[in-house]
Image 1 (cartoon, rainbow, N blue to C red):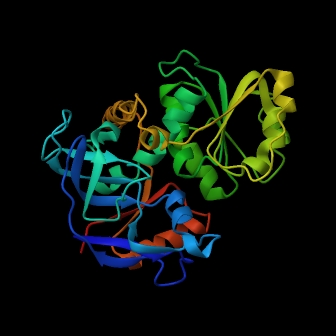
Image 2: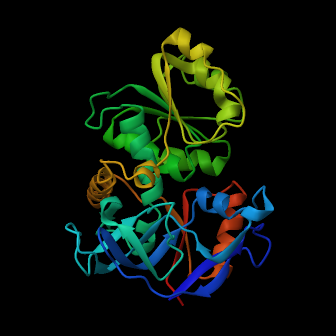
Length: 343
C-alpha cells in the first residue's frame, strides 16, 4: 500500500522530512477496524512529532514512521471483537498516537475511538473534524465540567486562539450545544471574521493585554477559560481574569513553572486536556470518544455544527504533505487543511 513516512526527524524544508513509501497492508484483529483512508487532516501534533529531536539517537527510524491523526474513510476489514461497525461503513476518527498513523492507504484503528462519518459531509470535510472535535468536546464538557444540555446557558467562556483548529469547533460547541456566552481571541481581520462567523459573541485581541481586552467587552471575570495557545504567555492574564471558583483548561504544554498562588486565593482550578489519553492508557471509558464523535455527526447533519475544513489539497503524497506542514508551522492557518485522495 502507498504511504507517506519518515526515517529521520528533519526540518520540513528538507525533502527527506516526509517521503513516499510502499508498505504491506495490515490485517484487522481484535477491536481493530481496517480503514481505507480517503482523506487526512494535518494538525500541529503532526509537525511536532516530525520535527528534529534533541538527541541524535532519537532522530533515526529503522522502518518508516507513519504520522497522521485525523482521517475519514471506509471500513474494509473488521477484527473478531468488533461489534459497532461492518465492512462498507463510512467512518472518521483521530486514532492513537502510539500506533501507525493515517498517512497510509489503509490504517488499523480501534473501533472504540471511531465515529460514523457525518452523512452530509464529504470525506475531506469530515477528515478535518475528529482530533479537534474530541479535544474541544473533552475540554469543554469533561475537563471544564460545562453542561452539555444547556445547564450553564449564559455563563461566559474565553477561548484563546479561536480561529485555530480546536478553537473553530470549540466556539461552535460552546455556543450551539452549551449555550454559553463565547468570547474568542484572534488578532488578524480574517481570523476575527472567522470567529464571528462561527458564533462568537465577542472577539478580543490576544496580542494586547487580555485583562484590558476582556474589560473592553464588559467583563472583569470569566467563568471558564480554554487556552489553545501559549500557556506560559497568557498565564498571568488568565489567573487574573478567571472568576473565583472558575476553571482554566489548556492543551498547550508550559515551558516554565506556572504560579498557582492566584488560583488558590480564588479556589479556582486548572486542568489539562490531551485527547490521546484514553487510547494511550486504554482507559475503561475509551468508547466515550466513539459516542462523542457520533453525537457531533448528528449535530453536523442537523446543521447545528459546521465543518472547519478551509482548504483541500489533492492528492495525498509526500510533496503535498510537506507543503501543508509548512503552512501549519507558519502559525497563520485558518481552520483546518485536508489532503485527500491517493493518486
